[in-house]
Structure formats: structure tokens, C-alpha cells
View (spheres, rainbow, N blue to C red):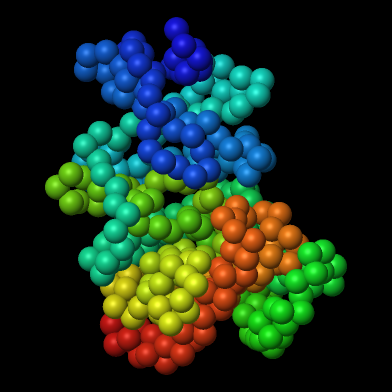
Length: 359
């Protein structure tokens, strides 16, 4: 028995494990497909990156609560084949929702057969993503449990700005001067871009259960093209709906690359915006408040602004957080996100008009 099979043996899968092989190309956690004999199902064994998700107990409790609530919703809807439409956690033999081998934390999930995911971002799959993530939020809108933050202040704009201000004040790498124009523009817009936190303090904007990592490849489809479920639930936690809406558009609606050196290629793709928004509001309109809907264009601009702030803070700190491929990589990323933010804001009126037209 090899090391991975020995790790899998600490859980309680049905059937006899015959093989464990690497699966997928996740950037955070390491995943392995657990093969079993005969008619028994396969499983997914994952090594949890506890350097990023430091409270594994809370992480797993979040996922257990969310998947149990979704399962109840699907059952109430009369859905069939539910094990393929929501993730299923397999407990360890000691009853815990994870296994700790003295060095690494592991979890096991039921493998969803005959499923595929896509990297391609086009209007068709953007609409599917809107439907999927909107429905995900809708099913969890009445969830009674309060989830913990798996990454504290992950999408807190005030916190991210304070990190930037600390980096500017310290100027650890001596890089503030050439970035001064961008820093000044970020500060000029800071109060308005922190609108979400202010509205929440005023009691006008609720926190909801959000996915917080809304990408097309975090959705599974049946081989026939039918939507199955949202996956990669590590970042599911309380946040404003802006997190799921705006973060998807930051990556999907960028006409250039996240680190594009050619800023003329960077812009906000309205075709992707329209497709995702139509799908999202089809699913989510049932629970969204008017103030949440009114601020969807703000969310589309907020997330490139936030990522610009994060890349810039890391650049000023001497590249201590994000992996870089060359010395100015974070500066290039900063300028590209700055350009995307500016483009998103330039399209705000058109975004509002489209949202009004489909409601």
C-alpha cells in the first residue's frame, strides 16, 4: 500500500480502493482520484492547503453545512440524481470531516462521474455560470447557520486599502515614486469604492452566503451539457453578493490578460457582461434586494479596483505574496487591472440600462 492509499484508508469509502492517481490541476489544493473495485463509486482525495485555509475545522464545517442545505433544497425540488448535483463529504473513520496525518490535512469527497468542466469563457458559458452561481446563492439565501470566514477579510475593500496604505508608508522596496499616479487615483476613489462596507454598517446591505471564487471552471456539467453543480467550496463564506457577481466579471469580461503588457488590449467585454447578468438575474432575482441590484455595476468595477490595490500593495512590499515571473510582474498586473477598472466604470451607464431592460 502506497502513501496515498494509506491516507485514503483513514476514510470510509464503499468498496475496495485499487488505485489513487493525481487528478486535475488545482492551484491551491492537491487532488487525487481514488479508484475502487467493481460497482463501487470513485472518490476524490484532497490535500488541503492549510497555509491558506488555516482553520481546517471551520473550513470543513462550512462545506458540510452548505452541502447539507443544498441537498435539502434539491430534495424539496424533486430533483433526481442528487449525488451528482451537490458535493458529498465522506467522513474519516474517527468521525471527523478531515484526516490529519501529523503534517497534512486531507478530505474525501464522492467523485461525480460523467462530469466535465470548461475553461472557455464565452457568452454561452458565461450565461451558464450566471445561472449556476445565482442558483447557488438562491438555495443558500435562507440558510440558518452562520458560516465562518475561511480567509478573513478576503473581499473587504477597507482592509485591502489599509494594506496598500501601509505598503505606501513603509515603501519597503523603494517603488512608491513611479507608481504615485496610480496610488493617487486609487485614493481619490477610495471612499466610493468602499460603499459596500458603508451600506452594510447602515443596515442597508446584507451579507449572504457567497462562493467568493466564481469562475467557469468551478462549475461541473453533465457530458450532455446539463448544469450539475458548483464545486470548489473552500472560499464559501459570508459576504456581499458583489463578491460572486463582480469577481466573475473581473476575470471573464476582461478582453485582455490579467497581466497584459499591452494595455490597449484590456477592456470590459459587454457581451460577457450581458450573458452572465441575464443568467444570474434569472436565478437570483427572487431574493435580491433593490439596493443589491442597483449596485451590480458598482460590483463590476469594484473587483478590478480591489485586485489593482492588492497587486500594487504586493509590488510596493517587494513581491512577498503573489508569485512573479519577472521583477516588474506585479507592476504590470497593477496597470492592467487599473485599465480594466477604468473601462468597467466607463461602461457603468450601459450596464445599468441593460439590467433595467431585463428586469
